[in-house]
Image (cartoon, rainbow, N blue to C red; front, side, top):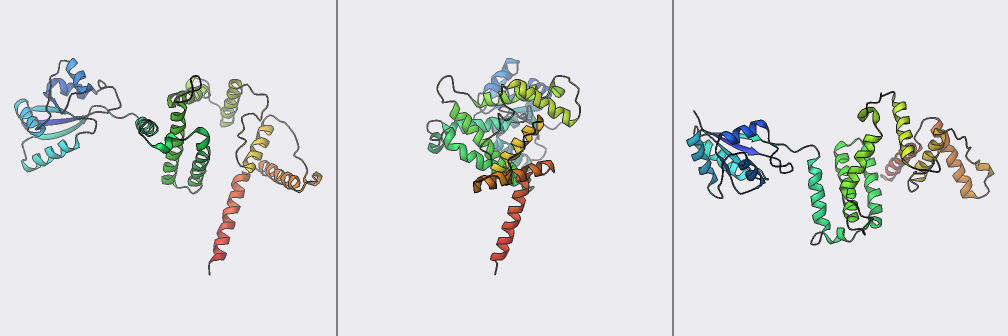
Length: 323
């Protein structure tokens, strides 16, 4: 029977003992070797398995162990020990029949595991000895960058460019991470962490989706949206239906949002008439507000409509510039 060498790869982001049943079977039944002591070698030993640390000459040691016992296991390090795998592969290619090489995954990264890497990288950048620029930033100094990155996400969506969307969402995530890292150094009583951000989001998603998490019946999309708004109102003490609107958003979108909020609760407050305004700027503003109201009645997004018209006009300008 041909000898067998198992390269056992595990996720460095999971506790060392969380291995598959197949992985536990093989480490209990065959000699186990590793390149260095680790939490994984310690855990494997607690089960009664014998682990031999081989800091050098691992290829020959594995071949000898496999020849003597039929199977030998290598506990790969956090990087997967690619150089060892390559060296073994070349050796076995030169000497067919010497042993069979098998890659076994004892555990896998869970979904979202790279978010942990992103948090770790940001912590390194924003800690002493990291990036001076990031260490010099504040929530206020970064505010414009967050707006810019969100606009770039919007552009990627408008262009239906999914690759660009993935990249731009990463830039938005960068802003979330750096704001959270800055908040860790706020005075006592004001500081919070990225886990507080994620925890608050999880609680909110669960709380506002009882049709998923609490066994409530799911109705139409309109009923689900209405239930979301009802739960949201119960969570937040607000004096006006307009509370919570982002006032820094573009004026056209702001006008549409105010009209929408008023319409949801049946407040029939007519916008000012342009002709009744004496000031030219107020007259123009009233006319634009009336246009936004008409767009809302027609089910048209005025921000998207103006953007579309502006971009079409930009194309016409570029065309006129050509000789």
